[in-house]
Image (cartoon, rainbow, N blue to C red; front, side):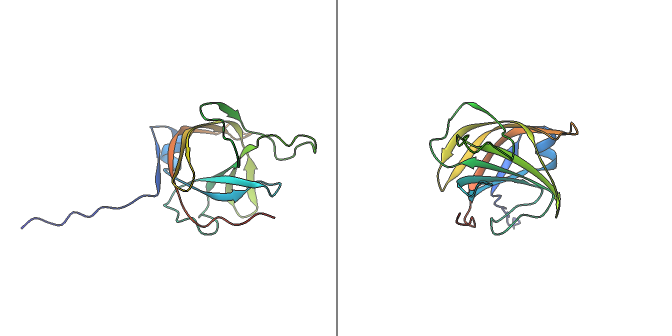
Length: 151
């Protein structure tokens, strides 16, 4: 008699052999908000599978991407947390959250290669902390419920 095969469903997977893929092997996407409280895609890179409700287990990388006409295939430079009031253009920024109260905004870029709302988001990223530590890789994140309303 053959032993049963058990399959484990992972919400998403960060691919390739980079530091990010090893340190944060899971990626999940959900509806969220920018720091300005505008609608956004919230992309989360985690060490453990994340179902989407509440914040993930730390450490994790959280990316906020303005909701709207996403520039597919373009490298998007991560923006600063503080922006000028007149600068209300497209927002993409990333935060590395180590512990409660200990997070840092990252430098780098993100390229979206696919956005299928309520299904998945795929792309390429290259993030660096001010200290020089960095992460890079590709991702294909499954959409999950659990985001919250803005405003």
